[in-house]
Length: 341
Ligand SMILES: [Zn+2]
Image 1 (tube, rainbow, N blue to C red):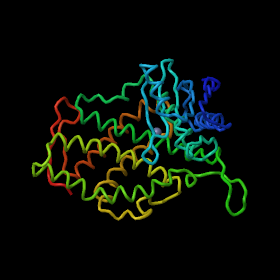
Image 2: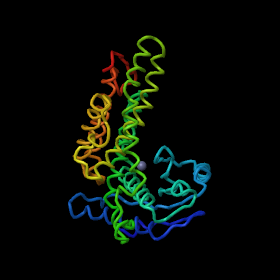
Image 3: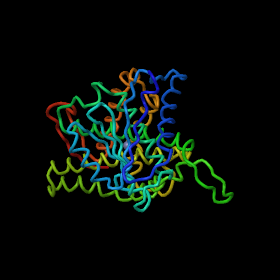
Image 4: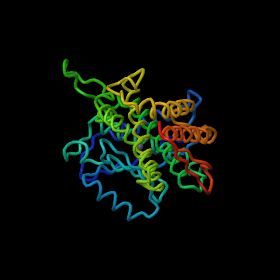
């Protein structure tokens, strides 16, 4: 595999970007090939072309791209609720990464912020993930049932986000610098210098409002205030946002060196021990059993089991809410609703 095939075309629209894009690409490439030395080789993954658009008019640019390319599929990354970047496949088997320039600094696209460098690394990690899974059969849920598909999708997304963050935090200090307030000297940037640090406060809010809201919703169904369909729709949507958020939050805590992420801040809500910790712990164990960026061979051997483990853990979360699904993965899924914890 020739590293030279991973040279991106850097396309900048209405924005300013320094040499960091090229450096981010180099770092990801280095991380990619460094794996060779550890036996976790990625050499069997052909790396696609990547085109960057640092866009001031993000939504319009993304829409224009999507309407011009009917084959495009996309992945959106949000920071603080707003979409910060979108990675999309294009018709030529490559990828386009749109970064929301407006998001980064009050309407001015800034090239050198740790947040932007982090985003670039994170999106490039996604490209590696997609390239690794190209042509694989396990990427899409085999389940014909809508709940089974939704839980598979949730598991896939959360795992991808955690891994992309993990790699981006790892590489960030090599690419971004900040000025040390005390010494005035440039010093390597870390997770603390990114906008992601806001996840800590968000996590406190998230856990605080989960309980008893979710169990109340289940009770609403049990006393016939809402339909089963409404309950399941709400829970599936909520579970997706929740698991993906926990993935981002946990990757941040790990980057900050936290031994016990659940001890950071005020996470005293019963939701933590009832729902979140029992769900996330087995997912993380399963993720850590595989390399950070699995090769195609590793991925084909390990990813299906990882996805199954994650779906099972997400079912634990639903079970704590009194929801059990029979024949998950079958044509007909049966939902049982019991008293929530
Ligand atoms: Zn992402």
